[in-house]
Length: 97
Image 1 (cartoon, rainbow, N blue to C red):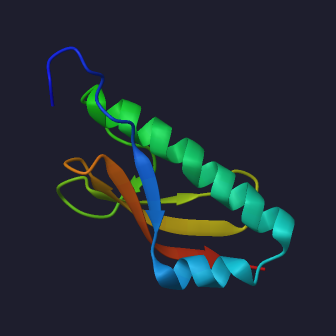
Image 2 (cartoon, rainbow, N blue to C red):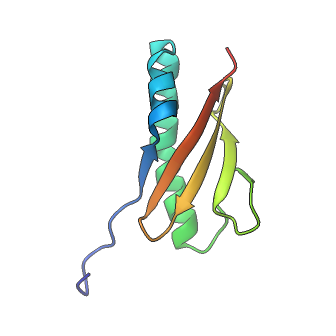
């Protein structure tokens, strides 16, 4: 990357199974979850870029896998931090509804 250009932002990628599952959820819940995950990518990226721990409960010893609940909703998910790709990956989403 050339000097002076901003680093690209962080993105969120939801794997196929959780993405397919969310299509069967009530539309408002699915939309709120997607919006939460998009905002989380920004929050995780800012934390990692600043050398801080990302939000959520760590699930491994190296701090790359975390679990978190969507605020105010019965939705839990796991995410993996991929710093080189500037991405968070969502392999598991569970709705307790």
